[in-house]
Length: 307
Image (cartoon, rainbow, N blue to C red; front, top):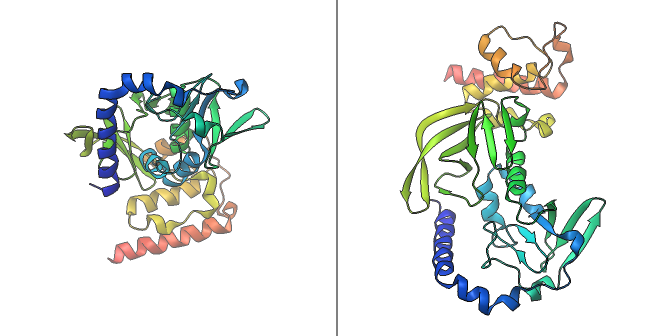
């Protein structure tokens, strides 16, 4: 198991045990330490660290993003009338201290609301409701599923993900899986693998710790190909996979409305809202960067055939 995961698991277990024994007493003795005054009413709601949003886009992994911000900022903020919870469980043991809150800044930008904490780190309001688990979960999932959501068979509502008719639930408190980049959905693990993703069954290996098995229950073609950075797409990232190279090549043609002859490719691309098959397809419509990618794909596939 990765050392970061082990350390995080041990810390979480200690926190859980301590909270189970001391929660009631701590909530009474230390209430004044977390009782906030002069909370701006217009800022009440649920906030996500801006850094968390950026990390999710970069790593495409909830666990890795959460671990990265754990030592530098609050996981999440639920700002209420006289208290601000600061961790995904929204419990008394994870509340902002009044002395720290006194150093916060509150910023309005149109309809948006931002908070700067005592360390100068920023948080964006994602819901005007306090303790809004669903808004937080939906925000996390919408970032990770950003390209997959163009597939008409995939949708997100709160913490629920529907994939080709099968429903999964995203748990805010991460289940610790010994697998970098995994996302836990119900009793399954979603693993991004190249341009696509597979959903595996998982099994317990100890208290709060799980691992994915080799049994795939669903495959999501073209789960992640980063349309936002399409112009910077590089074939080198996928050169080790013959399947991904083939998918990438056909993706480029699909972006220009190429009509596929095989039922497999027709089915994959027809599920996406951006695919508009056209009888007028022409190689001349390809942009220079796309032609360069296709040349690299051909070169990588040639190496594989010779190998």
